[in-house]
Image (cartoon, helix red, strand yellow):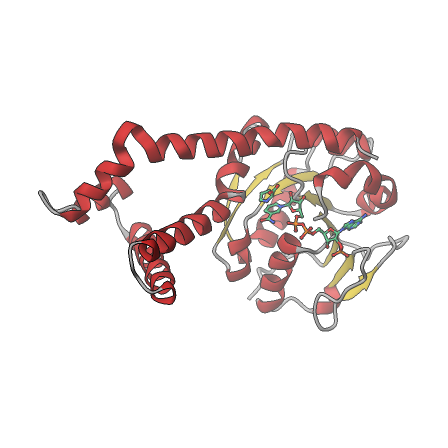
Length: 275
Ligand SMILES: NC(=O)C1=CN([C@@H]2O[C@H](COP(=O)(O)OP(=O)(O)OC[C@H]3O[C@@H](n4cnc5c(N)ncnc54)[C@H](OP(=O)(O)O)[C@@H]3O)[C@@H](O)[C@H]2O)C=CC1
Ligand SMILES: O=C(O)[C@@H]1CCC=N1
């Protein structure tokens, strides 16, 4: 069920992997399809009853929230077309990775209703985590509408400092990809050592799902839970010693997050200058 103060209408600019994951969750939680309009160049359907347009309309229904869900690099070309609609919105949520509020505001001068949001694809099953950031121009009384919009998708965290946004994106926004890669690598490792491919995939996935659920339900840290698996002198410790040697896994993940985070700054430049 949707929260009572869920926005009256959503106007989505783009509806691909991320926008589509959010929309499918809202619809599954009871959002009426006629409270959504999607702008996408292909005009492809996004679901029964949802209006899809290929050009920006001139007006939005009262109480609309605009959601920018196209690629960051497209902002400078999309802004002139959607700027008049952004101005009509009670708030405009930007999913554009890396793109700072200042670049969004340059595209629609004088509009103070931008909110940056960084969800991840588990929102599709209500288990996402979304970072939110707005500056002091954003009307305080609109925050509850944003909270209501995000609540059906999982948890949310308002960031106090926009400088943290790219790092959050690297962890929360990109993170599912790294976890999927880990599951895949775990399965392939077992396969390379002699396990049947299908069985390796099934067991790797079940193990990650069970371990993740246990960690979420436990009062103990993941580090403590790992130690509980590793019986003294047993098998697990031999494996952990490989992951821990020279901080191999920790170093690899730090490099991974750093590379993703730093790409955010390049995306900001592309968003400001492309087109
Ligand atoms: N994928 C993810 O896990 C996450 C993505 N994001 C952000 O979400 C945004 C979208 O990413 P993602 O969904 O992966 O990308 P996709 O390529 O899957 O979707 C992009 C969407 O933008 C539409 N589009 C293209 N050009 C225009 C245009 N000129 N005007 C309006 N819409 C247009 C496309 O339309 P059509 O389908 O018709 O071609 C498509 O629906 C990005 O800014 C990204 O940073 C944020 C968090 C996580
Ligand atoms: O890869 C990207 O740029 C987007 C941002 C977070 C996840 N996908």
